Image (cartoon, rainbow, N blue to C red):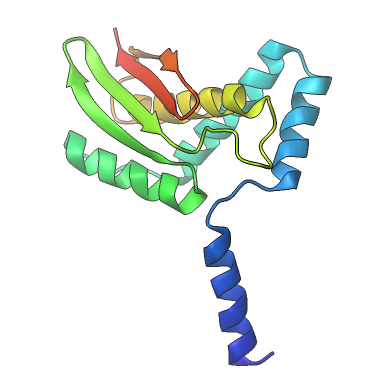
Length: 151
């Protein structure tokens, strides 16, 4: 294989840039078709926890450093970006992009995405010392998922 072909392939992958695939849609639809709602959401929460387990956050980092590290993961996976802010009783997690209904996304994807993100953030924050706190969905729109980790 020539270097030009390799570069061409890499550029094609870069152009793909996390755009949803038909396979992703089919898998999401099939999971919800075969499983109960609770089982499907639990599956995607477990996928989120697995993402967190494979991408450790820096130890003793401040909120800005955590946000940068997490956004690196989401950029790599083509799943939007997050803004983290301190709230009186925890951390406000404002995740934008990666949850909308692109051409190949299934109708089930927004629920799957919210559950996956909740699983990832819960695992990340529990790993850095928030084991007694919980992560919950606060609000979801077409392009935004707001979560809260804390009391």
